[in-house]
Length: 441
Image (cartoon, rainbow, N blue to C red; front, side, top):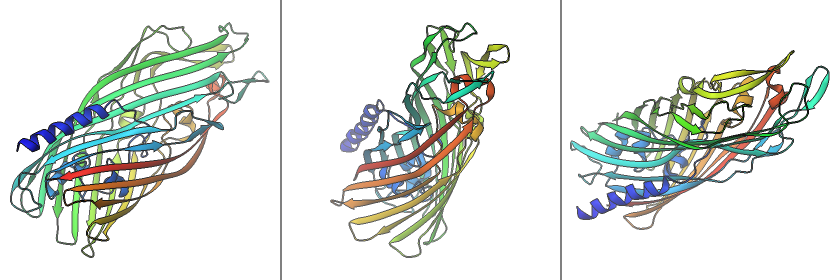
């Protein structure tokens, strides 16, 4: 018992250390398709197929099906090369942390009624770009004259970490339920630079740096789920992940009146509720196949989140007019995510995995210009991975995920072409390399 307490403390400490790591663009919108190397190897198809302690974030009921007490620690290197109007983003390598612990007092995957307790800390989502070039935006036309657009830099860095502390109850050999409160840490930094040349409207010339240094916010939500074993071939899982209610992000600034108009800028970025259903099929003993479907309610939180202290300059026939920003019109739609994963126990020590994940891009073309700091547009992913048992207690897992390149172009409304140009084109693909160490007791 003393050893278990020490390892539990180690898991919490590891998560806190990882909490300062940078998190970047995820793959289904701004969410990672999964947490932990085993789940990534399945492309996120794990709602009914518990893999490790990270299932506390995937479906808290799943920890009741782990064979023994388990401690996982690892992370992923995430590389999302992006281009905007042919210009590469300067930030292309990010670290995504993962650490979890599940305590099973029964020490077995058995039907005897019992509780299982878990805690996990994971980088779950975020976004970030660093586009910086004097010709970042293309040209625009006004009064029959073609001129360069003003945008020369767009930078963002958002981090989202979740800590889940949950409990699951195993009723028998067929059914479990689980619930976990979720605590969220969020941080956001942004900068827009506009280079204003000589103009007939009296706009001050020179580079206007609209910079918001890192602001932090905390939030809370909950997850509730179930796992039901129909028979030795079929299992189903269902999970509801509530909205994450976040504090306001607040920045103290020095306004220059171009885009930032107040000495205090505020923004609220809640995180969306989700529902996921998974069906797991075992046609033969060493093979498991799972299909999941997930609904992410982005429209509720990423349609027009509240903003204060900012404006945009709209170009009218009479010249530029400031438009107060009461919200940020990201205009994200809800997203359906489809994932399919398979794992095969090739030998006593080696388990291999592969998966497929698809979610339609949630940003319309005409809204792309308002999402240049959050272009989560990739759609199709494939994954592979394996776990190798070094000893009966010690496992090592790896995974690789590739998101195929997605290219999207959108027109910019005429009033805002002076800032962003006539249109915006963004290209992106992603690669993720994950490793995980697991120890079972």
